[in-house]
Structures are given as structure tokens and as C-alpha cells.
Image (tube, rainbow, N blue to C red):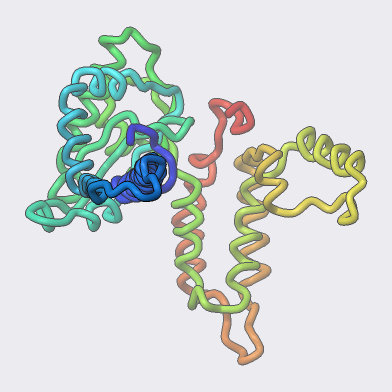
Amino acid sequence: MKGRTLGNSANRLHSFLVKNHTEKWMSRCLLYLETCGKFQVAGVHLAPTAHPLRMQPVPTSGWLLSAYARETFSRMEELQASVTSIFGSILKMESTKKVIKKLAGVDAGTAQWMSSVGNELGQVLICVVTAGEGYGLQDMAKGLQKRYELARRTPPEGLYVDRDCCRADGDSGAAAALFASWPLLEIRLDIWHFIRRLAAGVTAESHPLYPDFMRRISASIFEWDTEDVSRLKRAKQAERSRRGTVQSAKEMARHCRRRTRGAQETERLLSETIQAFMGATDTMNIPLLDQARMEDIWRTQRKHVACIQVCLRSVSDY
């Protein structure tokens, strides 16, 4: 149960043990009956053969989970050492309610938010569960900075957040104040949250033009690495498959890296995309964008275009 693979659970382990235990018990019963049959001699009266022993029941999934939990507590120091040995140069801090909704039993309803910090490899460095949004972040940030200091690791270069990346006057926001001991840390807005802010200007996500609008927004920010794309084309040509050399979106995402276009180019493409869809309607003449709301959103969010760019290091490096 230590393996963190999909479907690795106590119920699956219990089913696996029941299947193997049953097969082994049946094979031994057959061997026992076959051996007893060899002693049967015609004309000789022997005592009846004793029935095979009953199969011992396999422990329940709850018992397996409880035993694993007790075994885990015996490795607490090892687990703490492995968890606190994770570092990164590009960090991301985010808060969510999805994990908290999974709490059950006596712990249900005792917390509202879970805030965590991850690195560029998708590993979680530290997390905290709080009763309200924003509480406990200062202690979490202090603990993370102390971990880097004790390990004598170079402070991270950048931190992506979903809010409070900068103020209206251009000064560093609340996120920078949490990491005061890292003065060179670049605070940037996460691109996914930036796109969601722009998506708030649509009239409805069920609009037929909504997928096209979101694809244009993403294409205005990201571009595929030309070298990776050329390599994929050469590989498809060498494959000579019946489908030809057309790359699907999944193949592009699997084999090619993406990077941001740059602040000026991104701002220009986003402006053109918003203007192109401003008067777009469906067959029932329902507009895709709320013009007044979209203009207000773009006016307030265009200052973050430079903030979402990866100027510290290209995304392709990861």
C-alpha cells in the first residue's frame, strides 16, 4: 500500500488477498482429497475421510487500513524527513476547497480551506489546512523559508499565485510580504487564473463559441516550441502511418513544449481576440461576450500581462 499508484487502496488489496487465498486453499483441498483417495483399497473398510479444514477468513479492508496506519506512524521521522527535503526554484501557491470537502466523520466541517505550495515538478513542499481563507499562511511561509535556510539551499526565483501578485501602484502585493526574507523572489500571476479572469466576461460557458474563444485566448499567450514541432513532424513522416503527418492536440501536448510569447505580443493578440469576438453571436443572436463587462475586465487585467510572462526561465526548460 506504500505505492502511490492509481487504484492502490485497502479494498483493492483485500480483493487481491481474497482471490489468492481462495485459490491456494482450493488447490490444497484438492491435493488433500487426492492423497486420501490413494489409500482407498477395494474390500477394505476404512474410516471416512475427514473434511478439509475451513478457509480462514481474510482480514477486512478496514483492518488492513488500520494496520497500515499504525505501521506508518512507526516511520513518522522518515516520512517527515522525506517531505521536508523537497525544494524547488519555481514555486506555486494556491488555496482550494475541493480537498476539504472530502473530510468525513468527526473532522467534517472543521476546516474550510487548504493552502499549499508546490514546485515546478508538481511536488508539494508544504500545505496547511485552515478554518478561513488567508489564515495560517504567514506561519506556512515562515516555515518554508526556514527550511531553505537550514538546508542552505538557494532561494527560489519565482512564485506564482492566484491573487495579490501586485498592487495598483505597481508595488509588491501581499504575497511578497509573506516571503520577506526572499527579496529577489519574483511574484507572478498564474496563467490559468488569468485566463479564468478573462473568461468571466462571457455571457455563458454553454455558448457555442465559448470553446473557440478559450482556444484563441490560450493561443494568444502560449506558442509551441518550433524545434519540438519540427522533430515531431519528421517523426510522423518517418512513421509513414495511414493517418499521414497530421499531429493531434494530444500528440502535441505529449511531445512538444510550450512557452509564453512575450508581454507585448501577448497583449496585442489578446486585444485582437477580444475585439474579434466582441460582436460574435450564435444562431439565436445571443452574444458571446458582455461588452461592458468584458471591456472593464480587460482594462483592469491587462496590467497583469507582463506579470504572467516567464522571464526568469523558459517554460521549455522544465
